[in-house]
Amino acid sequence: MSRKLGKRIVLLREKKGWSQAELARVCLKDRQSIERLERGTTNPTAYTLYEVASALEITLAELLKI
Amino acid sequence: MSRKLGKRIVLLREKKGWSQAELARVCLKDRQSIERLERGTTNPTAYTLYEVASALEITLAELLKI
DNA sequence: AAATGTGTCATCATACTTGTTGACACCTGG
DNA sequence: CCAGGTGTCAACAAGTATGATGACACATTT
Image (cartoon, rainbow over all chains, first blue to last red; front, side, top):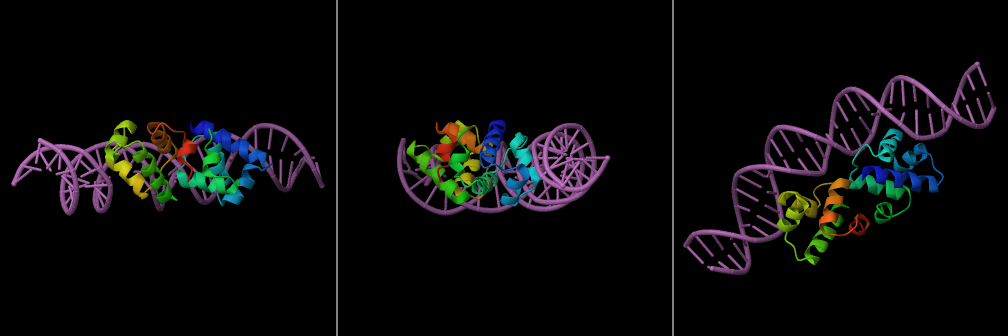
């Protein structure tokens, strides 16, 4: 499930033409944190997902369409 | 944000006519864990939300419409 | 009155996420 | 060639979610 979520984040990030570093910058997060999220090696918290969704300018529900 | 999410869980749970204990049972979770979630005192993980959504027989996106 | 169901709260140990730092291989542009 | 961007991986400290247990007040039921 984390894997699928990660793939969706990659998809939405690339749709904006951003690199992991760029998304991290907008999220005020670390480049490595984004990378872990996208690889699906962690089980992120709701707030982390909210921050990513906000950075991607979408809703949480939109991000979670997995 | 956790507060709003908690209120949504309460709403969806009551829509099914369930008590916290009943939702917990279906989730294979502790009654107190559900209560913390609903009060918004924790920042739940994606997997926890997935388990709750599954118990409520809705999608994660549906649960996260907050 | 007593028992049960309900929501709430606190505390504990364990496991995990997160931010951080450092590192590596790969590719592309100067 | 080489400097920079890219994605990946590992390990650490600090903070936190989770499951568990126990407790409390309130309402409803028997």
